[in-house]
Length: 165
Image (cartoon, rainbow, N blue to C red; front, side, top):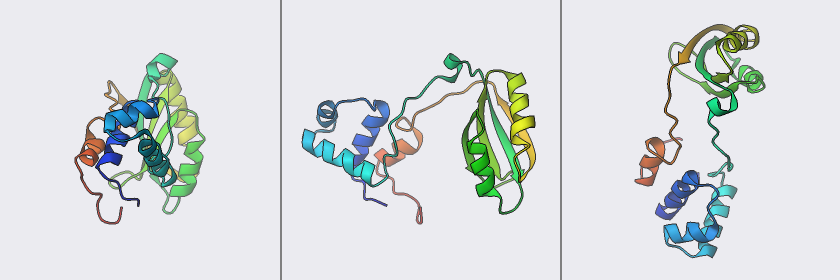
């Protein structure tokens, strides 16, 4: 893990808020030279801290009005195969291996509930290794970005990662 200092944390917070910010404006916002800002961003990319620059799209504005969490119990030692398969299923946005009553939780987005039904029954339940599913439809959501609240606030305030992470 790379060492992240207070300036790096400020840079990350600024980039999460606006990944299209110019290096000149970024440098001014975090009070460093443009060359220093550029070098730091390059290092954060090279060290794998910044994985990519992306756009956050409003799902409902592109026709994906139904969101759900699909929890799955899977066969022992099938996590990687299940994750690989689910990664190729259209509509599956995020996949996580979890502890608790279910082994895997997937965030899915579809056009409507009929497409959600088809996704769960025909695509997800057909994945080799998936034993059972439970679907929870999202009625409303708040989609905070990393830089606002939660982990980013803790990081910006200097929180250290848990041992071994």
